[in-house]
Image (cartoon, rainbow, N blue to C red; front, side, top):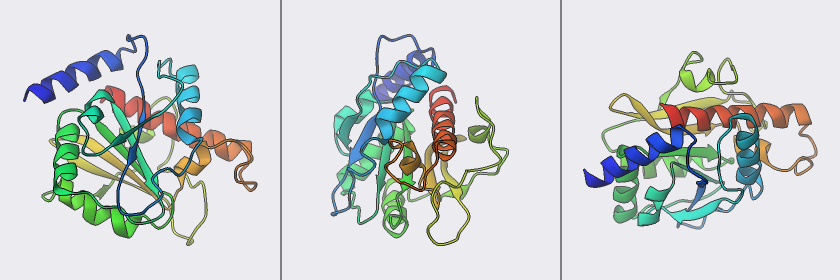
Length: 216
């Protein structure tokens, strides 16, 4: 309860954009998957949000492990990759406390993560399932308006889907699938097929996620 109160208090401050500086963090996980992917994504999203949402994120991302007490220092954490991911019981329990206490997790399937991340999130919330968020959900209607999750990269010809884990009426985890949103945040030219228009679309959707996470 003490952790929950402290984190909710911090998020109230974050939502007012009052502190001198705070950070986004990328989750480092075990299992062999490339947790370190999308190397330029968060710094670019940070820059975009600071400019367009008047947030005050530190320019550099942090790296945090799911089982670390340091995770409670971040209002928003990001997880991505292509391959295997494993949460220990301790890590799953710690991540659960973080999310129940007011934290927010964005998972972005970099392609190939889906079959690994779903059972791991079941360790975190065994009683809950991912549910697809409808196009009129507030996450798609923040500063920027979207008719659902935009498509950034093509993989298997499937439509992009945004799933949420909803705890006590609050989306605590947002999972972007068949979209590759984080790739769209990377430096222009990282993926030659990505135009600046596509990149801006990805950054605007990312900004919506941040705005939603800080204010819901």
